[in-house]
Image (tube, rainbow, N blue to C red):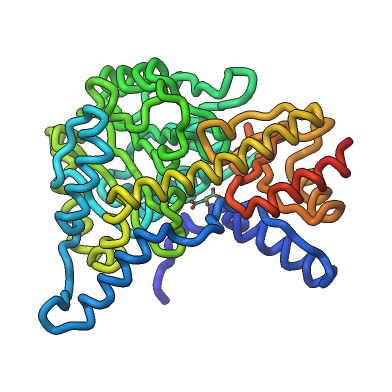
Length: 410
Ligand code: MLT
């Protein structure tokens, strides 16, 4: 009988979003008339920008003609997309990244999990708490942790609490760590990291030979011009960071699937015998072996995000969701609730009324108002007493949601 990966048995019952889905389905089955509004998972609702869908249609036509048909593409992504990324996401911000340091993929969720393939088993890993659950679960799966305790924290991980008490600024680890996950703008708290905060982390990583996994999936939602969009805006970051970016939220690609990961050539780790090894060729090897690239049609769509029309339409989409975020924020503030995020990120993070446990508030909200959010404790022990609302929805639903919150809480 084949041996299974026992580490999977350490995982907590269900991945957060399926667990929410399960509770919502049960409620809907028992209350078929319910008009449920979902502000739980951050999933986009608005259609693809026209420049993108036009580019994808044109690419489909190319694939339907012998002369322009394409088979396997480069595993790392087509040059037209990698170059557009370099020009628009990096050069335009004065950041030096070359096209062959960009690895186009089908999602940052996959990349932030897959990246562990190229790291060894004896690393100490730091994560913020609360945190995007994928970082934790993928470390559990590969055996980088022990068992979870009753609050859901895994033995072996270094948790960095981010709460209202520390202004959501993660404290530096109290012991040496090798890998650090940072996500800014932050999922789930919707807060951002200033240049100074990121510099502190880059300096820490340089002084401690650590690598930062920087998830910037929500950078397009930054409205404050002082906030960095990339960790590579910080001097010295090329030697210590890998950056993950995504088209999911900014371009409406949650169902289309396209993202990219930036691995600078300066970045190194150590081998078992202690010698230095570049990370870039390892990720290249991993992707070439286990991944066959993103479809040509999708990459043409992603590249259109950088065309003049595409940029304009994406900005409109981002502005639309950010307007939703401010409607949610203001609605909650009027009710006297402490609210964070929602200014440079599409997530609003609130303290539950009367310090209700997060899942209790989830259940109350669902049963009394037919609204779905995400319990803060689902993102980690330090998220207990908090709750996340996503701004990804139609305007009508967001306004209706605020009206319902008003009725329940005023
Ligand atoms: C979220 O709601 O946190 C996101 O949708 C998760 C994701 O992007 O995978």
